[in-house]
Length: 169
Image 1 (cartoon, rainbow, N blue to C red):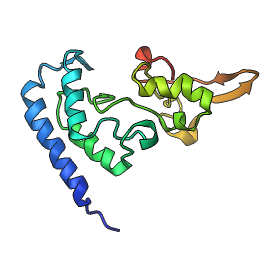
Image 2 (cartoon, rainbow, N blue to C red):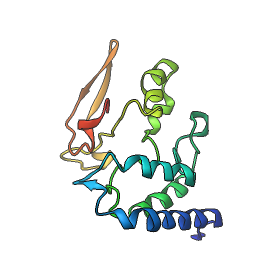
Image 3 (tube, one colour):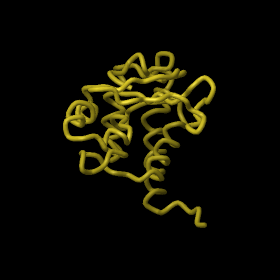
């Protein structure tokens, strides 16, 4: 198995490291309020992400993103995690966070859920952790049963990061 990082990804990693060292290191003590990025810093960091070509990096091209593969995204996340200039979880400066399930919705559901998230009008989060399962999908017991024109969800979730700031889960 070859564990060498392809050259284009190595270049991307170096670009990210320069961004962090140049734009974030000098201000990292000023950028967060607790675990949140201060609103005045978001436009600066988002602009730099767009300039570097990592804006909406993991969003498929057909939806206006770059369609980067997981390895490329991991390199970006790894570099971003090196500094305290951003919250360590869910920073969002590379664009909206879209879960893959939203890409598989029917047309009407995409209009209701996917497109508003891609436009930055709505936020979503992912509820996985359960009291007796942690984040192990094999041990999860929550169910969603189609019931008429809606779903009946039964179960308990825990540690739903960002739930208080989202429009849907």
